[in-house]
Image (tube, rainbow, N blue to C red; front, side, top):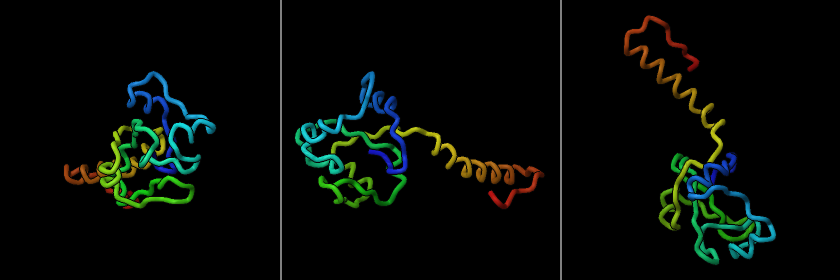
Length: 128
């Protein structure tokens, strides 16, 4: 499971699962393997148990939306409740380009505060 705006990194998923390679299941095999139709696959109530991995960044959110097993139906729950309700393993699963950009602003603000506390004579940039 990953955020809707993120891109799954198959190499990271394979590493987390202890496999050499990971790939998407073909559309024709989805229902047979999961018991759910395409667009309604959920981590809850699968036909047979299978490992479930969720991106570690899930904990950054107050609430998450998870498929409830049918197209157009969702559970809204906290990440903690989701992790407790299903046997889920957390791992870094997404391509990181967007994440690095989003954290740059935080690092810049932190660096500026650090300079101020060290009596650095350079002025602080108020836009950061």
